[in-house]
Image (cartoon, rainbow, N blue to C red; front, side, top):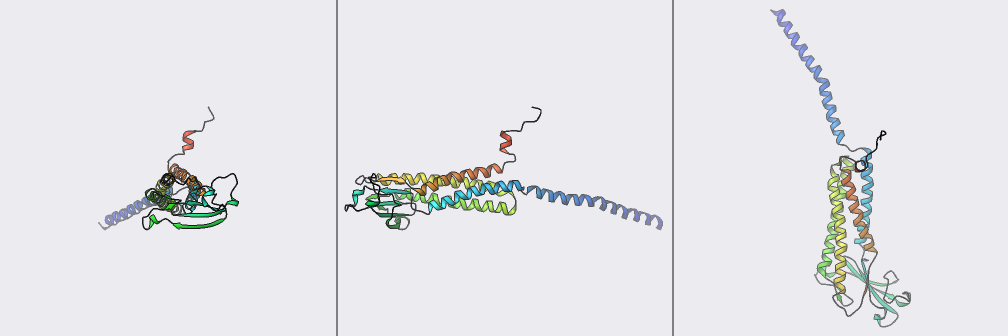
Length: 268
């Protein structure tokens, strides 16, 4: 009886060892498969390089936006040179989203063929102040013309919202590159596209505010022109939209280039 019991015990131990031995490769395979699945979610070097290129393009748009929004050369308002009265100096105004400046120029420095005062880049004395509608809610008066604070405030708010979306998109791309996962590309794409649209809307609303300023009083004729700050902000909005579209294309499971232009096989 003890012989048969020893036999069954030995068979049972060998069976357990066999099961454990058979399960060990499977267990290691499962661990390896799990690691492989984790690695499959990691981005490749090629994808990481494309993300960095698209991010560099977006950073260019962010830099131009910050440069344009932080300066007060969005528009120049130039009255006739004879408005000064003394014949030796004249005044030109220029303003942006946050503050406006009145610059006194020498008439001798102005081109003889130019009938209005300016441009504002000429040497002279400047007097710059922040707009009061950000603090006390009062409109600004420039050459007897009154600003439309609702339009100016709308343009400023759109600009601030666009800067917020740029910051959020940049954070998403930084997390995507640091973690090595493409999960954050979709929210980054949304943020950059929306920021570009908001930048362009800010320029459009600002232009409407300039037209409202000019139409507030027709006693003083003013020559107006959009200046270099808008030349920075306008292309920046387009660059941000393009950067957001590139991020959206990188999230696709296939290559759009290969999808639109499939490779021809050698037989054809």
